[in-house]
Length: 409
Image 1 (cartoon, rainbow, N blue to C red):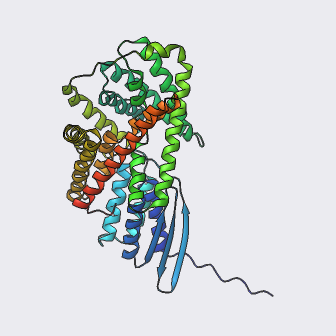
Image 2 (image 1 turned 30 degrees about the vertical axis):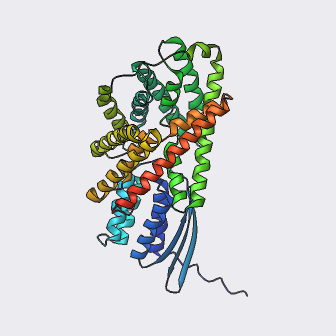
Image 3 (image 1 turned 60 degrees about the vertical axis):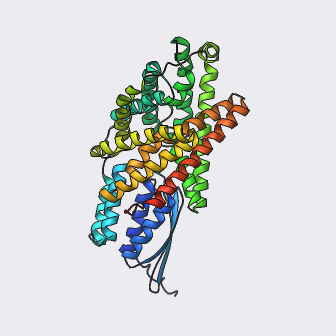
């Protein structure tokens, strides 16, 4: 008779915890270089020699202890940005690395963090899509009409995200459906109301979905040597742009009888003092959209104000492209200082501030020109967006070199 197979050795709890923590990190959308560094530090604290290789939707883990060795491939879907969950994970990770928390207690905390229900419901999320989109119309030079109409378009986009996001396999339809909806209604609104720009309405109505932040993160990963993860994220960003652009082109095609008159609308910008109203609104919306802790509102508001004013003053001194880089440098320094002072992830303030700075709107406009067969204008705008993204990345890297955050994430 054949001998029975040897029993399969159970995975040690320390190894299982590293894998569980890695899945939690990946669901929070952490960049590859921070993901790998944090897990390497955790594995050393647990007496393991660990090497990790992160991708946007998976990671490899190689763990060893004395004469034992384990290799794993973990597949997971990227989750939405959740700043509160990320803060909780960072606090747990830092406590474990510093020896203030044992492995068993840290594992229990990670499971509790992952199982916690969302703080904000669907109705509040839809409302904040409107609040987050409306101020963007002023940033793009729109007046009160564009702000009001963009708020309505943002509500429709938020409703589309919530409804399609609940159905498995429908989440990727969010971008073309939202693009078609906003593209059609922006032209119709500009045809109906005087002094309304359909371009401002389109870009502002979709600004929350435009992946400008993913563009910056992908370039950050490429700059830090994570070429596979950065390239994959960059391709995903391009596909999102294409989906949005296709939807907008379809919506404008359906509204083509109205397009000629709609394009004549010229916005009437609001005075600068109105920013005292719009910036707090967009900061409050970001607290909900990025699922941050409510008590982080003052810090998020400060980051948005600092990013906006830094980019504006930098544009006066250095021009619009280099000015955005200066704004990113100031924002990065302030976010790293916040991380060292409060012991929190720098992304809590960095992410909302970057949304004010990212060149997503410019890139989306360039794609729109190309779809409308205005290739020269489209390529020029797209290259401007790429240059702005490089300026942003340079500013963030300089801030990182000048002041390192103290946390693991």
